[in-house]
Amino acid sequence: MQKKLPSILLGGAVLAIVHTLLYILLAHFILQRSPAVLLVSCLSCFISPTAGVLAVWHYVEITQETIPGRQGASLGFMAGATAVILGNLLSGLLRWIGLIPDVRELVETGGPAFNPSWYLQVIVQVAVIAIYGLLGLIGGVLGAAFFKKRSAQTDASTESDPL
Image 1 (cartoon, rainbow, N blue to C red):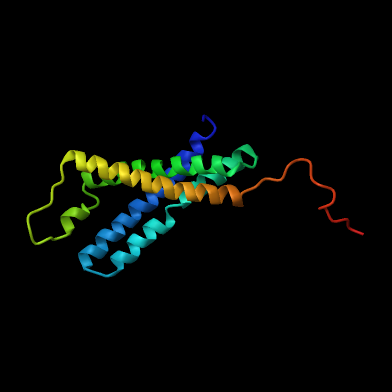
Image 2: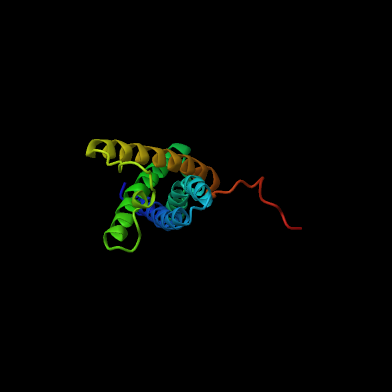
């Protein structure tokens, strides 16, 4: 686990930063009442597997070894879950110091404000972590398939003989 942690944190941190930037873009489009809100939301889900791909790429580059799909899946899952946690911390910090607005305050419902209880918020956060973990898992499996290192012993039949 010691060798995997930097890769997991890198994949999670990069995706957390990208998601925070998308959150800012989403807030802008909500204020403008633009239909691009749907595009940004879809883009957010579409790029989520990159946490797993990035974690696997980094791990393969550091260790110089090919990893099986199940190891890529575990790296991807942990990177996706880490991205949610780091993204929540980063966006929460930016909202707390007043640099970005809270999207829930921007959405006008016309009725009383929906203020979910703490246990509902915890359930939603666990579900979000699971979903992004699964998206990261997909990225990790894809990354394990894409990023393969050649072994030191190459097969002589696959090498071309320059004549």
